[in-house]
Length: 454
Image 1 (cartoon, rainbow, N blue to C red):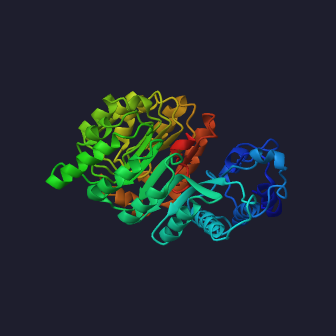
Image 2 (cartoon, rainbow, N blue to C red; image 1 turned 90 degrees about the horizontal axis):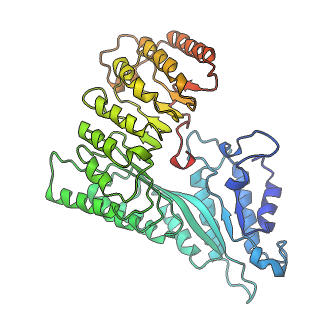
C-alpha cells in the first residue's frame, strides 16, 4: 500500500508458498491500526504485482528462489480479489477494477503468445483469482484473455463478474468461458434485458452451482398486462432460479415484481441472507409474503428503496421488520415516502433490530423533530454505526406536501439552517455517548456494506 514497487515485484517473483492472497495478508497490520483493505492500491503497485507474476512465469523455478526439491510448494494461486475499488470517486493514482481486469487480461494474452519452451522448462501453472469487470469496449479483449488462459501456465479464475451494458449474446459467450468452480457472484448492470433476454441468459448462470450472489436489473413481469410469451418467459426464469443451491444474495433492482414476489422467492432452494428489491413497485401482499417466508428470519441485508411504504404497505413492512429483527444488520429505505408519522409508528419495531449497523433513510420527507426522535430512540441499538439521513424538510423553502422524492433530491436547501441541524445532531450524539455513530447525508460515500463483508 506504500508503493514499495521493487519489493512488491520481488515478493511475487520469489514467493515460496502455494498461496499468495493480498486480501488475507492485509486483513490487519500487527504494527499499527491502519485499515489497509479500505485503502486503494496504487496503479504502480498493481502493475508491480503483474510484472512479478510475468517474471516468475519466464524464470526457471531454481532462479525464482525455489529449490528443485520444493517445486511442489511453489506458488499455485495468486489471489488479487477484494482489493480494488469499483470506480466510484476514482483517484487518478489508483488502479480501477476496469484497469486491473485489462492488465491481468493483457498478461494472459502475452503469456499465451510467448512461444514454446524447452522440454522440462515449462513454468508451473499459476491460478490467478480476480474480480472481472466488463463492458462493450473491453468485452473482446477479455474474451480473448479467457480463451488464452485455457491450458496456459497463467489461468484466470473469476470470483465476481460484473457486466455493464453488455449485449445478450456477449454476456452468454463470456459466461461460457468462466470456470464453474470459482464464480461466487454475477452482477448484470444496465443491460435492460427484460424477461425475454433473461430467459436466454439465466440457464448459463444457473450452471454455476456455487454461485452465492445474483444481481439482476430491469426484469419486467407485469401481471396487470400479461402476455403468453411474457408468462412463459417468467415461468422459465422461475424454473431456472430453482436450480441454485448456494444462493444467499438476490438483487432485482428496478424490476416490476408487483404481486409476484411469492412466485420468485418460493422457487429458491435455500433462505436468502441479502435481498435487494429497490424500485420494484411492491404491493402489501408482497411484503406480507416476505414476512411469513423462511427468508425473513435469515435476512442480514434488506433494501426496499423506492417502494412507497407510507400507505397500505406500512403495516406489512413493520411486520417484515419484526420477522427480521433478530438477524438484520443493514437496512436501506431510500425514497420510501416515510414522513414523521410513519417513522414514529415504526420506531418500536425498528429499535428491536438490536444488531443493526446501517440505516439508510435518504430521500424521505422527515423533519428535524423526526430525526431527533430517531436519534434518541436508537440509543438502545448498540451496534448501529451509520445512519444516512435526509435533509430535513425544515431546511427547504416552499415544499409541496407531500413532497415527491424528485423534489427532495433536486430542490435547494437553506445551508445556514442545515448547518444548525448538523450541529444539534452532533451535540445529541455526544450527550448520549455515541460520538462513534456517523450521521450523514452523504449517499455517495460508499458507506453501504457489500453482502460478503457483513
